[in-house]
Image 1 (cartoon, each protein chain N blue to C red):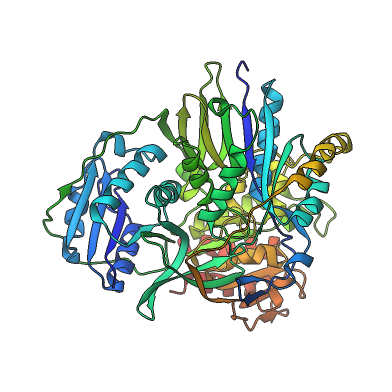
Image 2: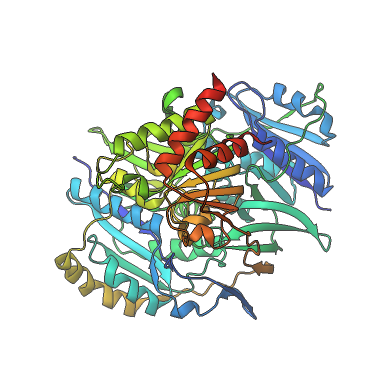
Length: 339
Length: 270
């Protein structure tokens, strides 16, 4: 097996996050000589965290400039680590930080890059990447001749490495700071109680455009829809997704689900989150939307139409019912259980 | 706004999302069954980039927008008939594959060559736009490599908003994990911005803009340079459609309360 470099950046507290430990597990499973390359303000704690991996070397680029998630500095750090490690295969978690920087590093090293890998295994003794094409509509297994080959592994595809911590020896790698005109000034996040996107939630709750349509009484019940959905998200600790049609309505300034943004959008032109369970409401489950459910294991849907897309083998259970009435009752039951 | 920009948008066509896609593997590697027959649209995130570019150009007089598009010439012409009505731009067409199975490294090479061939492009005012991922390859790696080839190291991906300031600097909102945005300030172009959805709705069709665009688009399509992509060193072992078909249990006869109880019990299961 070829030599492997695992690239990981530290979190603000100096530790390695779960996606990095997942990529580490994938790297160890390949069996080649492993070098770990760390980037961050301070890396000793992260190195100690993975001291039990038996990595041949742990290299690190440290310093104030590498605290920020920024293309110029991240690419310089990763390039320096790749050159120092001389590994043929470079594996990294598909975080927003590495996804931004590593393709450019592949170009600098005359290598190649593949992103959104869902697995990396040996096939006829050579590494092979599995990834999806056309927005999760077809899955391919591919190999490459060029090296270094940088592979970004999507989060949630491999169990995270869980081994003993220790005291690791870290080799510092020097980097000439590249000139940059970019400064990271902050993070914009919704308040904790308004947070609707929870990547670690066990349940994805998806709202479709039906929530904003006229109901049986001939009126639109937007305010009630908001209350029911937010109430459910709070009690079930679920993450919220939306169909494109519903999100577009919100973007066009119509008086509907104010908390729904394009960040919530699931499907062909949205995201493809990973959750153990998913509950769809007021959504027809047509293909462009349902591709966003590719990585949801157990799927249930509530829809008034028994012939909707969910009925055609896309959901495990389809409840033919009024989502307003069902969710009202679900919230009541959950409320009783919690109290 | 005092500054004007040279905005180059990279974006190509993808199959209409409502189409059924089926992979076939031929001698040249994988492709889509009846690929040339499938109706196509401008890649959605690249489309957002184009609309943001047009909006920015409107607010910064003297700015200009180019759309650099790599795809089969005949299909490009088809897609441009619609896209041309959305926003004013000059097309730089590159006649090559728009397949999701094309290598992003080679695609980046072709796009960078196309951009370098734009006469009179002022690189000091260049904003390189595109979708942060395509709906075909979905790699999110092409723009970074185009930027590297053009020597641009101020790069942002998953951009939802840029706001220019009086001093020429601009603030960028990039998507990061957990539904959050990272805020950065870049002091000046050139920069690469891979757009997510942005914040603008799709513009309405404007036939006048379409007529003006098409006068330059047709000659641009005729001039389109061949840009074959060999996928050197890339080997697809398999390409397949997902096989999982669920046995959907359709529940019609339960009361609302019973359905709610069943859902709550299911949510609570480990």
